[in-house]
Amino acid sequence: MRITERGAHFTVDGVRRFVSPESSIATQERLGGDIIFAFDECTSPLHPRDYTVRAMERTHRWAARCLRARTRTDQLLYGIVQGGRFKRLRAASAKAIGAMAFDGFGIGGSFGRDEMRATLAAVVPHLPDDKPRHLLGIGTVADVFDAVEAGVDTFDCVVPTREARHGRIYTDDGTVSVKQTAYRGDVRAATLHNVRWFNGLMERIRAALMDGSYPKFKRNFLRRFGA
Image 1 (cartoon, one colour):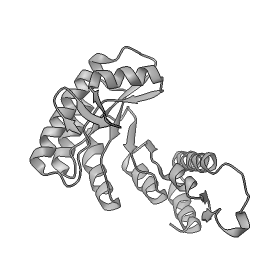
Image 2: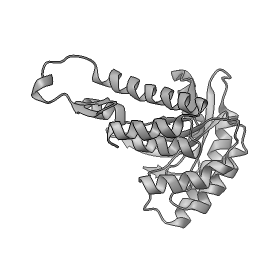
Image 3: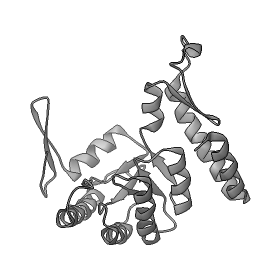
Image 4: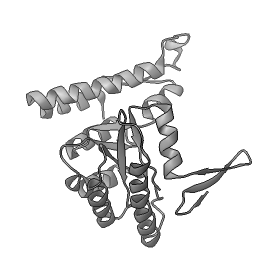
């Protein structure tokens, strides 16, 4: 992988590839997703501050190029906040991306639970209140509750599908391994179940927020789930 101002150069199966902000948007428009994302550079937590600054500023320039490159108005285009593990950079990125004409905002990075909380505290206050906030790559039950309380609206994560591939099913009473003898031969769709269960959890969280029962709902749910 080699990152330049033009974009990302990499090799797959011996074939050289290149993706730019413009080609990324063109591909996403052809795929036809309801929500698409600006091209960004997600730095490693191990990157030093000086490199993280350069990558963040490049992400901001790429974000502007993505906005210029879009041709469809029936898709929502989200900008992505970066800045690594540096809270001041996160705040600066949120201000820069939040000021651009995106339809919503993704918060990118690689987080542990405590770092996720600190990052959201640095980022969310600088994003517009009237546009959705999406947290990239977070999806455990406890993380979902923490992020919702910090002001996050939507999530994407491999947890529902990855856990399903390993035979782990989510229920309100915790997870169940269908690799156990009692479930051998059960052909019900684990991936579809887990995705629906997490979507249902978000539906219940929204309802509890709307009717004022959220603290009680959270307490009872996490106690029953065992998180």
